[in-house]
Length: 207
Image (cartoon, rainbow, N blue to C red; front, side, top):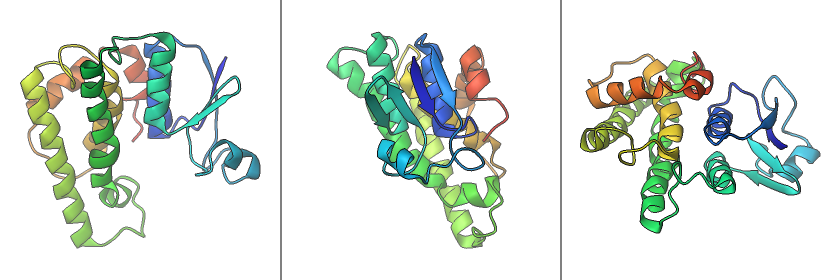
């Protein structure tokens, strides 16, 4: 059976758990990370030299980086609906997954610890304001995409792009600051809420 190492409060662990359920995969999840089993051990660093979660163990195969894990899982099960087999369809989904990891998530690197986690080390008002502006800028890019598709992030069907961005947008929605009106995102979020796995691992009260 697949083993997933990482605490369920982690946004990146939750995207992997959600993917497993969408792909119909059984898994064993073990809590690692702050407050649980340490990632700062030689044994864990042999699995992931970054000492971060999640880590996937599939027999003798070990994989880290949450988006890479999600891709692997759907390819392993042949879920072409979540990640199309044709090169153009696949690239379309993967570009939004990569945008989530490199652009969207980087926008909240300062403002989320400040306002979401209330970390006293993140208390510079100018950097908080800049972070809010950048985060909202990126949310409007997604809003425009969803206005264009009228359905899901990558087009007419639900894919991995919706999984990774669903969790990120949930974090944006739950972090307290002034936000723009995003009717297409709100309609998309309502569609996500019809999926039981999203309610368990995405919109479940956790940032």
